Image (cartoon, rainbow, N blue to C red; front, side, top):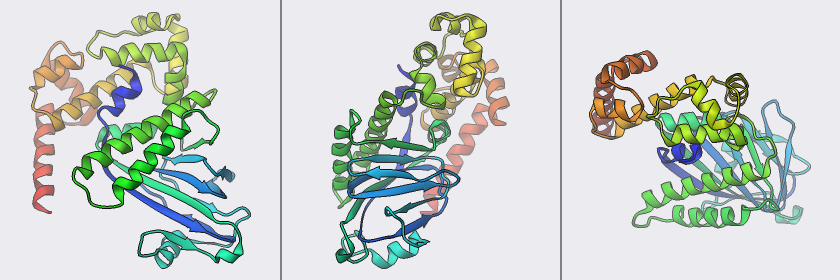
Length: 316
């Protein structure tokens, strides 16, 4: 299994939200910091600019897409921009009965139309993914793969537009498909992607990541992974850390613990079975490693999570 599929197979989308924005003339809106979700937008008509905190504005044209992942405040504006104002207040005052935000006088010029979505995640896999994505991804209309993405977004918009049978599972799976396709386009069109995505795109480090994720229980060493990458041990270790920000064995342990936490939270396999699945020869060795990583034994972690889940159910 490739690393992206491995991560996304455990990704849980807790909620989705889609909206539409139409504006004329000059405008600028400031959005606050956010947490544990990805913002995605598609420019349906016109041109606008986005600016993340501390980064120069980026212009987006009709047909372009963007993803925002790092939770930092940002702003969107016309080209050229108008006076900046708080987005929440402006959106509240200009949202119509159909949910569309319409701002400005149609006589003031051509419309800018934007469809946007928000995908919220829960669990450690969502947090892991968000940590490894670049803060801003810009996909241009000419990039290969954007047409399927446009179709997925339209279907997601339709699914979130009204209550329908099976809506929860449909929205969650569509959100995951949108994210997968967006990341595919990004990897295909970016010469040197940053971070973990860049590691997957690197021919040699990507090969090592693929075998690691494909057989997590194997007794991996730096030497074995370097062989899979076709590199010397030293060159592999240096390149791996440059791209992922961690050593090969640190990465291995963190992913093993992520898989173990997911299994303890969402399954009923025994601790011994989970230990074997993530590469530990005994549940004793696994329990010791798990406690070092989380501060709890596997049994206590599962018990605490179950108790918290019952409390959340009772509070609703």
